[in-house]
Image 1: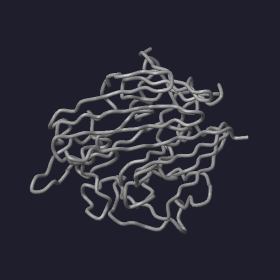
Image 2 (image 1 turned 60 degrees about the vertical axis):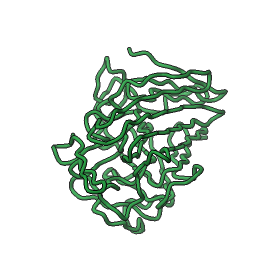
Image 3 (image 1 turned 180 degrees about the vertical axis):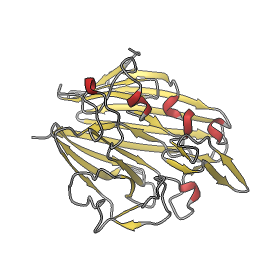
Image 4 (image 1 turned 90 degrees about the vertical axis):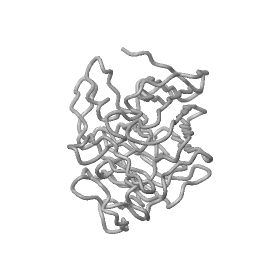
Length: 305
């Protein structure tokens, strides 16, 4: 069992692990764990599916791992059958041992330094992360400072347990269609008349692993993104990010002792639009030295009854 850190409010208790800066549990009013988790001593299978971790510095998929910047194409290592870099490849932030820089009863701070060239990307980068709880809200603040222009789209990747049924609402009129490698085609399509129309609550389609276009710009303050109702809770997600990646969990591993199986958890990840570095009409994800990357995502929970 790896070392964990616990923070709590009057209603929420959350535990974290510096390995990937992952969230291991989140409980409301002393109830069950609302996210999927299993210790690596049992199996690393959920860990390999990014369960609870921070992913980036360039979340989601990048075509061929290629990042054009000016006259230079930076090559990220590909970790999906050699054709895409997923969550910044095999050495992304989810694989790093973060340093705990501060712990308080209701707040945990972590940091990681990425050297210039790590993961094929430019810039000496410092990523600061803060988890905090207040009443029934967990807030995730992420900042990144760089000394050279570099992509930045960082995401938190918990799987919300949906065993027993669920309904999902997403505040988006459009989504990004994908090809057979799960990469955006470059088109921006209306959700109307598709399985991805979550403007009114519905269960997630098992084939969902798509970006929902909440906005074309990042916001100064968190705005509504999604609401997920399960047998145990009602979750509201607000974020400053322009996109929400929703994944049905169709390829989650079978881990009976942890009650984990395909479709037992849903990933809802506020982030920049995927493969934006290769689609100039997508919202820009390049971070400059004179303007640090900043994200705030809030998870507000209430009882399902």
